[in-house]
Amino acid sequence: MTDVVEPGGGSAAGDHVHRAVLHLLTGAWRTQALHAMAELRIADHLARSAATTRRLAELTGTDPDALARLLSYLVGLGMLRRTEGGRFALTDAGALLRDDHPDSMRGLALMYGGPSYQAWGSLLYSLRTGRDAFSEVFGAPLFAYLAAHPDLGGAFQRSMSAGTSFFGAVPELFDFGRARVVADIGGGKGSLLAEVLRAVDSVRGVLFEAPHVIEDARRHLGELGLLDRCTLVSGDFFAEVPVTADVYLLSRVLHDWDDDGCLALLRAVARAMPGHARLLVLERLMPEGDEDRLALAWNMQMLVMLPGARERTLAEYRELLAGAGLTLRTSHELPLDVSLLTAGRTPDA
Image (cartoon, one colour):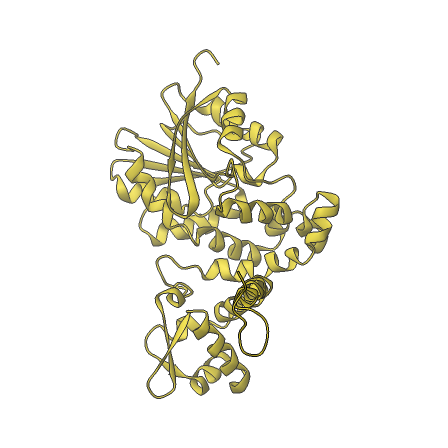
């Protein structure tokens, strides 16, 4: 069968394929457009009412003509919409870049369009050496660099809290009602722990984090009115987890480390766990086949950003848990391709 030839040459099928590849090749442009929208706080400026290009240029300190081009592009991307009088307003997607949105993704836009974007520019370095590009670009591994640069560290913590709508599903899938203490290990500023505390009034929380993260967590949990139900503990979770709890949380922590690091962390948690306790692991699982899963993209992100980091299959997590004397009990699907794994102490381990 002959393809239909479109006016001007080429075929409909050929045009579709070329458009698809162009869409992929210009992905970096979309990332930078959203990064600029976040950096200029366009969503915050439009939160109350629509505004003209000139007004937005005044508010953002930008050139009106250049800004007009960005705004038109953002309309095409579905982040903004045009209203009467040549004004621009937020769409539901655009509203997610508001700083005060309950599910704000502004931190993610700043991180992915900033340091992460710079590291991805050296992807070939990672592919040729097997080492993370972030260290090559910034002169230090990600977590050491964040500890030495508090402003960027704050942006990173905000990015980790972005796109976490799946947190709300965790108390729906796991019964925290019988737990007295829930410990979030490496829980950032405590966003997942906060979801658990708000869902179950009788639970007390413990947040175990690195010293430079604790103060940000203290502010966040204080703003939520939950600080009086939390104990904040700082330390090195590879060496010891000095926390006794009924439930332990590890949310998107294990994928940051190589197998040896994961085993050291899991063994530290297992040593702390009473016999009845449960460990909840939240991670994106690599597909066993060729299905399109978000873990495939995040697996590349881990390669670029952190030494030895990777996404793993369910079987690989089962093996890691077993190596720490833990048995995988259940696996449940959460939104955004995240899985909730539950594990307990292996008898006689």
